Amino acid sequence: MNEKPSTWQTDEAVGAAKAVVRDGVAAVSDAAGEAAGTLRDAANSVKRSAAESSTWRSGAHLANQASQRVGDAADYVRETSSEDMWSDFVAVVKSRPVQSLAAAVVAGFLLGRAARRV
Image 1 (spheres, rainbow, N blue to C red):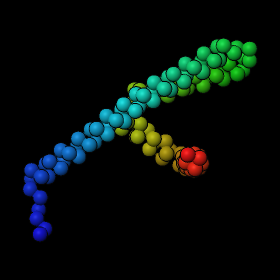
Image 2 (cartoon, rainbow, N blue to C red; image 1 turned 180 degrees about the vertical axis):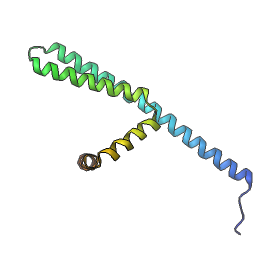
Image 3 (cartoon, rainbow, N blue to C red; image 1 turned 60 degrees about the horizontal axis):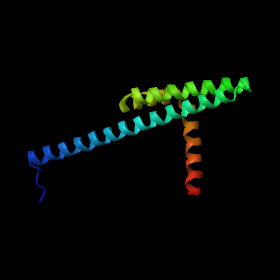
């Protein structure tokens, strides 16, 4: 009853697992591209709004800074592989564990509230 799988069954399972991983990586890359486009659009929108409302200089300056940072985030998402993003994430969590834990608690709280409203 405890038959050992044949080599071809093992190879087939490994091939199927690799295909799933490839599909997952492709999906993450597609999502990252869409997210980068959305971030770039948001940055441009903030920049336009800041230019239109130049009556409040300090606010326009802050909006331009925010636009630049969102644009930088869009570039990072577009130019960085998902594996490198994960490595960067792990490095940040290791270098700032208390801040990471606090951010996770806040994110969990906000997600919980959002889930209750849906």
